[in-house]
Amino acid sequence: MENKVKNAGTARLEVAGRTVDLPVYSGTHGPNVIDIRKLYAETDHFTLDPGFTSTGSCESQITFIDGDEGILLHRGYPIEQLAEKSNYLELCYLLLNGELPSKTQFDTFSNEVRNHTLLHTQQDKFFEGFRRDSHPMAMLTGAVGGMAAFYPGAMGNEDPEERRISSIRLISKMPTIAARCMKYNLGQRFVDPQNKLSYSENFLNMCFSVTAEDYEINPILARAMDRFFMLHADHEQNASTSTVRLVASSGAHPFAAIAAGVASLWGPSHGGANEAALRQLREIGSLDKVPEFVKMAKDKSSGIRLMGFGHRVYKNYDPRAKVMQKTCYEVLDALDLHDHPLLKVAMELERIALQDEYFIEKKLYPNVDFYSGIILEAMGFPTKMFTVLFAVARTVGWIAQLSEMLEDPTQKIGRPRQIYTGAAMRDYAPITHR
Ligand code: CMC
Image 1 (cartoon, rainbow, N blue to C red):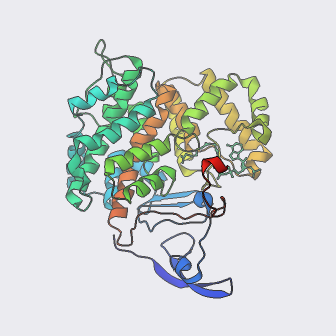
Image 2 (cartoon, rainbow, N blue to C red):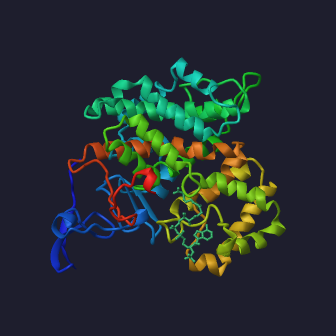
């Protein structure tokens, strides 16, 4: 990757009687950054920023978010335009290669993705080692990490062609692995991929078809699935992406790094929010309980948060949530589900929270996970599968970010520092003297 930051002056810092001038850089969009790489060498001080609320970890040319304006761009293209006019595989190509493909490039790429969908038969045996009721995210983490055993050559981080093939393999095989996680939980036979189907159709077929009956793929649901994948494809340096970068920065196998990303995504503050939001809707149960629940979510002592609301970066409406909301209504129309009790609770929660002073003042809007949970529930996915679907979609983002990091000449192993507040240095006392 060619580094493209521009000089934008200096910032002067005075600390412990020393003055240091730190370079300031500007990017294409977004706030300028202060380069503190020399801070420790020149001042003998570190910075402290738990949660990285003011810290950039890398230069990136993939995704841009303006949380105040509610803007999300992939390689410069607004997510709303991509969601309306493009499709998931085209977005994968864009994220990985930087430009939209020509017709020939797109056909070659999608044929390659379609031709790597099968899993090694030994990999199918992994699943038998899990309890039937295992959480599918536990199975997914194990199965993705285990892929490193099948493709040891992919370790060659320096070889761009090896990395390209690994990317294709991961994008192709993630839906197959994810669908197997669902089938294993259900106690049904695995359904093999059908390469004549589109990416989303193939996934729905592997999840919902059974050998005993014909399964007809509803085009509205296939489009909704594709949108879901697009809206979750990348989101710059979030927890799971930063995890992937950090793991791979040591030179670890890329599939192991992606497995670490899956593990990070699982948490309810991140990708696990779609599952947590749906569980919360079930807990609320009926329309009359909504006001009481909203009251509890505003009271810190209750320990309850409204899942699917709020975002670390978006302090305006999440642009993905707008598209997801529209898709949500399309799916409910297509399935004639507007009277589904759980979905009615969701709509009431959205209505009340959007009018409530607490949520308005703290800029807590429904996020992408709020609507995606409703869509996935309506489509018939078990709640435990929601975060797995997010992981399938985010795989391309993780790969694009990992590749970018490996091609960045300024890349180093990630190694944050700390402020130590433990015991001061002291001498060891033998056990008889304690
Ligand atoms: N319900 C009630 N109050 C909330 C909520 C919520 N969902 N989210 C934040 N707050 C309050 C919080 O109590 C705090 O109040 P105060 O200023 O009085 O202390 C204030 O809003 C700011 O919260 P914060 O925790 O400092 O904000 P953050 O940026 O660290 O957290 C968040 C962002 C997404 C973790 C948080 O909003 C949250 O826990 N939301 C619910 C979980 C969720 O939906 N997560 C999905 C995120 S989107 C998918 C993804 O990108 O992975």
